Image (tube, rainbow, N blue to C red; front, top):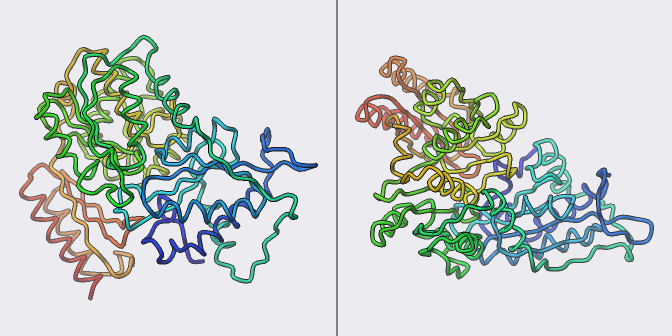
Length: 462
């Protein structure tokens, strides 16, 4: 069966397959019929006659095309008998929270995350705020792509209603503030905040300012076309430069849907997700609240993080790339903290998915409680040299099918002599092969990465 969903929902260029209005309307019908056909214990659907209508929360980022897909999904959901709660532009983790908070049956985010404005995407959360399992996505996909399907729609008197939830932003801010001690304030801290002209443009400054921080704002003037454009977590150097210019204590750079974050310390040094995880893991270990002394990450995380946990009597558990797979490992093993090198961080005590703003707040809390600057905390982890090259490919074929790729990888592994790693994988959202090599010698790592990437390019684009 053809797949619609990648590692983080459906994603593509606007008005091109699969992000076409007609297909998204069918997606709304399919998901609506699927969830209407399920009985969820304790569901709080609106009673209409003898039936309960399921509830769905829809949020989006600031892309101009969000209006198209919000309308198409709402039409499909209402036609299939669901009540729709629209919350407008809010971070992805806010939708996961609101889905639980409002006792909805599922939640939907319209966003292409860190991609440029001409892309958009759709991802789903279940009633507990977790991303849907592959099996459910596959079932919904089958319904969407079956052009002969007859929709089991309700009668004219049982279709759903749609409305705006005006206090959604405030609910999310309260949840964020509840993740730090009640007596803690951020007064005296100067924070550069880059919202990438995305979903957090309004809520993030408000949350930090309510906690007392002085906020210098970047990327808070979305126009529908400037999301992620030269700002945000893809361009953390922008926040880093502002930190130095304003003498700030920290820079916080979010992506378009604010589910990930990259930080800059007061010296302008940029910290990735691995370094942020080390800071937060050390804090939880010190407090004795990191169950099993386990930290969840992905195959992309630096070897230094693995050594860091081992030296503290802990363990780094690796999952495949994608925050949904990190969350899956966390739930299966009872892990409280996990994340990705790209800046997704999951604090299972506070959230069910990656939350860049929540992560920023936790680091600010650690700074305030420890009395240390971020540069001091960042010294916990010295990263091994690592090189990542993205290779655009025509088709995602198995690497093992190409002898030249296998030969190049084997050569690189032999050169690293067991003191480094070679990783080949495909992007789940773009036509890219990712070649990552890390080791002790930076020049050797860069040299080997180019050789392997060239082999991948030649084999897959012949």
